[in-house]
Amino acid sequence: LGPRGPLHAPSRDDFAWRAVPGDKRLTGQSRSWSSVFAAAVALRALRVSSRVTLRRSASDAPVPPRLGLKALYSLLTFSWVSKLMRRGNRPPAIEIQDLFPAPRDMLASDLALELSTSLIQREWRARKDGHDEALDHRSLAKSLLWLHRWRLLRTGILRFLNTVVQFLPALILGPLLNAIKLGDISAGQHAALQLFVVLCIKTFVENQFFYQTTMMATRVRSMLQACIYEKSLRLHDASANVPPVTLMQVDTGKVEDLTYSLHTLWDGIFQVTGYSVLLWWYLGVAGFAGIVVLLIGLPFNARLQRDLSGLNKKCLQSSDARVSKTSEILGGIRALRQMGWEDIFEARVRKLRDEELAAQRKRDTVVAYLLSYFSALPPFMIAVV
Image 1 (cartoon, one colour):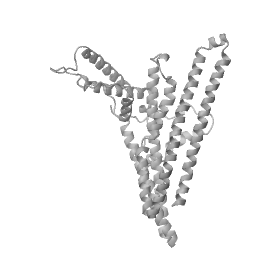
Image 2: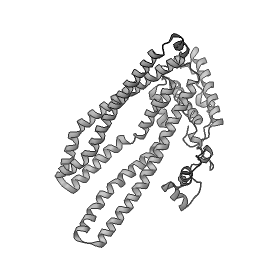
Image 3: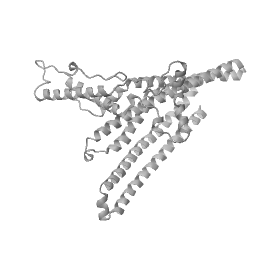
Image 4: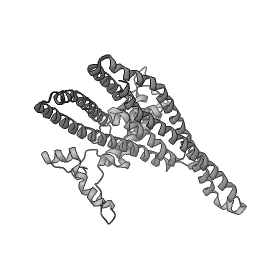
């Protein structure tokens, strides 16, 4: 299953297990089960290959299919959306036909087929190798990473380039300040020009990174939402531990946020190391005073982050309780009206709503503390250094 090429139906050799003497994997019921499973996989793959083609055509591309410097400028500056933005700023209201057609690899129905096929193939390969691997959250994470491996590589390269370019202004400011101090106009102009070019490059690279990351996060969320919705149509509401709407809105949002933060895991270490080296290069031993201040503030930051995580979980639980109680009331509204229990259940919903608002207020307070901490730390570090 490739991220760009079309999906092909698996051949018989890909899925057939040959029973050989001494092979105990295919005996009795397992042989019949494997035949049914192979047929299901083949039918599923045929359905995918007939409906899904991941290769974009010119009419589906979200950017104008032109070549040359004009197309490169359009890609770097996102001028291909200028017409749509101007259309949205004037009446009448924008319509669906004014939007860009979605590329084929962003359609929800095709994304659901792509993910389900990847999970089926992963389970089949595990059973073929003799491993009894059940589909769980680890299998889902592996499938998502495998389907987006090239997008992850592309966004990782952009993030690395953005961080490297982010270090360059600190290297250029030294010669610029020396030129100003010595009154060397020519050297100052060259340093100022270099600083302008570096900041322009950083802007282009950073915007491309966020665009590619947003596309990947939207693709992951759409993929999960489509799969959850497709499965909810085949299940009874009482058989689900969590309402499908909650899964589609809350849990997929968590995965989307994680997609945005994937590269932060390694890029944060890279940035801290790079800026520490720059501080030592320009300030010597005095530069480590700022690092000491940063290390002293880490426990406070970690405590606030833990509190914020707990409050976010409490807010979600309060919202789920309120939505469940509201759904229960709407499901039995006739009985409530007949028994005259409107006030009782209204009081219960209001109580749940008050608990939800209290949790949200506490969460917002912790967020305000975090923002104040992040805003006050850099000037304090500069003052110490």
